[in-house]
Length: 302
Image (cartoon, rainbow, N blue to C red):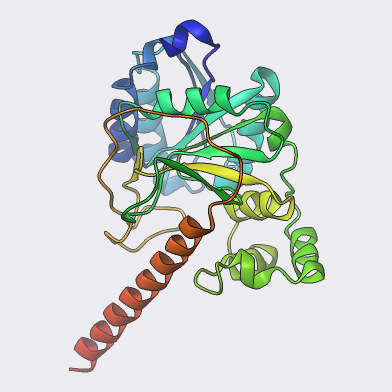
């Protein structure tokens, strides 16, 4: 048994004002095989405006009743930190104390084997200097290997270690300067198929406050890699009007959860075939988006 051979990583969950999604996230996590042996830390952000205070209050009432874990520790922000600052601060606090961490947000439904995958991978690769993190989600792409590595990092259900998180650079301008110096914009953007660099530029301008793009690029610039499963252990259910960054409903990222667990150690090298498949997926969703946009414009004209 995994739990008999290692200290399980603490789970950190970030919540705000979406009660229904938070419940789905927690209920799925409670069904994980290692839930009752894992410590759960919940960071609850304060309301940004008075008109959503009641939603935050409902969340806080709910999380105080959560059971099914070895221990539940709650941090209630007294002021609104925003998602990025809350994640950066919360991850730093917990990973510095425990040496490793598993991170979730309030719109991520997990497979019953998510914690098993994360903890086993954290143990298998803990001494590999090149590996920055473990990721639980993978796009709906066919014919992927059981696990593989891609350069960079990700944010939909992930895990890392204290020394790897220490490379996180919060200053987007520093990251952008290094991208330009090394002429890496096209590679970072999967050959122009996904606008990570634009997202970073928007973060610098204050148009978004994405911690995730800074984490991805921090890792990429160190030439480090992240482990992905061939079939996802995480489903993102947060594409709605209450989402912080993704407000358009879409099923482009919908997957079938992996309901089995098998993990063998592989060589820590980027899989360029898988990288190309992800690039092709990004291009396909761009095509799908523009098709739907044209149809919407046409219907509005009519």
